[in-house]
Length: 397
View 1 (cartoon, rainbow, N blue to C red):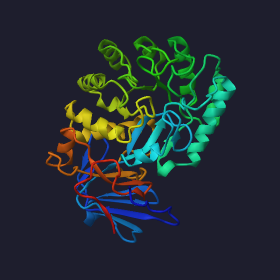
View 2: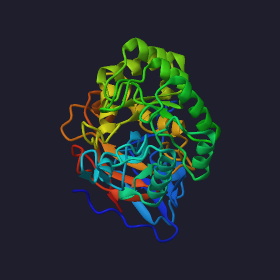
View 3: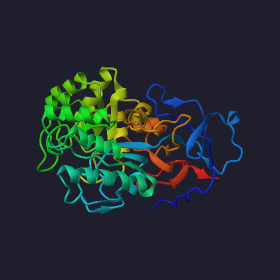
View 4: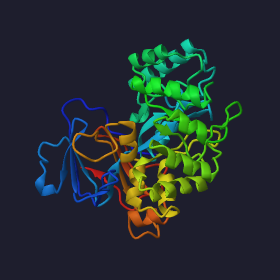
């Protein structure tokens, strides 16, 4: 089991992380930083550099990284939460806490579709979305930031409904296609309304995920013009390669690859984006909980798979799960830079890996060992109970 997490902050807090062996920025244009020390105050990064050049005085918490790698907390761009840390999809408690032990510090809801008795009338779906947004804004399971309240749109909705949702604080749409709207023209109209009021949109892509859902092909995806093409590698059933290529080339929106999709199609989508010189559009999710279960290491597994089988340098693969998603989703985390949230994951080569170092091990397909996870400058778990044991782990001084 993970060690007890540090308790809540009660006053001004200053975190100093020193002896960092590898600093992974999350920024795809500059993935590795020449620094060994990070300072955060009151949950925000304030300094990055060499130990001799940054102010370490009056620290309230000092972490010795002991030569391990420090990366931004991982972001899962596609989850389906319901109530706190319980999912009825698999009747499982603690799934978000398990993801924390996989290095995930932030999750984005693609719709609370597994809610028992989910309402489909306009009044009910708006009420559910507002309630979910409020619940997860007020409660962070194990400290994980869950951005929820993502209504699945229905044909009866009007522009006023989108304004009402935005006025109430809703900033996301659930996957277009999981509600009653499955055609291009209707989706395009409603996505435009959502965008007008600052609500970000995602679309289901591929074959039906569960009985009752339906096919969403390239024509609907391209016409809808959502901000994110949800699970472009299918959830679970992928579109043909020709359609995936058309989507990659025909829009300039986010291209989301998920764990609960077609792995071969994931590699094809990655290769296509890379050939286009547009890796910055690729983001990662799990699409969990799902029929295939909950994957606490899903994001880490995607990083290793895309690096090893997709021949993507490991430091860039990590950017797909951090900075790319943060920028696409307009989040204040995901990058190690001044002013960002102090959300971190400490990683090292798993014990007995054939890799010569962490990046080499990931490139070989091994999972990293996670030694600690920090959210808003507070330690939320120490050695992960889910990853292979890291060769080295950080310590709290």
